[in-house]
Image (cartoon, rainbow, N blue to C red; front, side, top):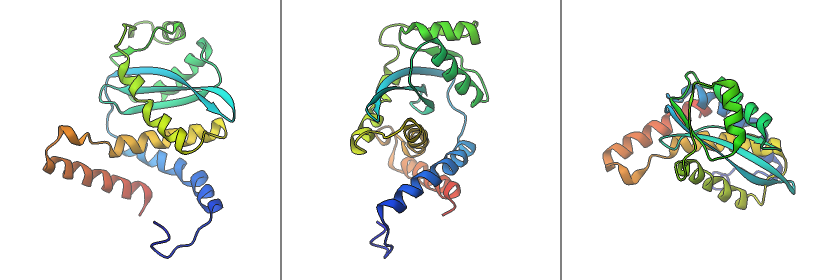
Length: 195
């Protein structure tokens, strides 16, 4: 795309842009993001980062929008507490209920942070969070694995917000409504990136 416009770049330029701009774009997109849902689905999945196993903790709402992610080396109670603190700090309101798998770290952490919160661990209830890992796996394959936990955290945080912005579920909308939503998404993107 850059070559078509007569702009010559190297791989190093692209790498530097990827280090510099996603953090600024992420902050700007978070400010413009609307209110997320009040039912949260949480899950963790292992990813290979620099040849070592890391855990990607992800929270999505009932619409499939990514609320937050965190890359950590463990999946114990301490890691769950860290994820919940980051998750609750970044949101304006608490969820109505949280749905997770049967990992005991979730229950231990929630009983410490917010014991009154409804926590559901029924089988198959957490499929929405399980499915939300598919784009990450696709990106992981395309990038030939992540090189460091910091790189994975930066990229996946940004990728989740961009995916929330441009995923309009075309199959559920009429053509006119889809064009309106797509236009809003491009307008928000232009504001966030100052294009």
